[in-house]
Length: 133
Image (cartoon, rainbow, N blue to C red):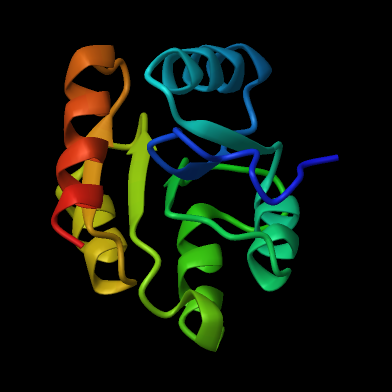
């Protein structure tokens, strides 16, 4: 159970929504090593359930192609969640077409990165997004 002081000294709490277990583990380890707390979702439905709930979050890293709801569908449904209105979402996906990028930004994403990704660049971008808020 996470107590009220569990995130003291942490840089923020990030929801990682990624259906591929290996990539989700890599992302969680990378972010935890960079002093972030991580909440994981294995698909779009689980991500949306977490987003509908009260868990404080500072940022979402989300794939587009996931079972259940896609990342874009989750983004679109997030717009109706008042307590998540300002929650930044970084899309991290293998779908690097301009149409995918445009759709992600039109749906509310603040950034878009393609896989394979540079771990250093990802952490740097997350830090920039959080510091600009």
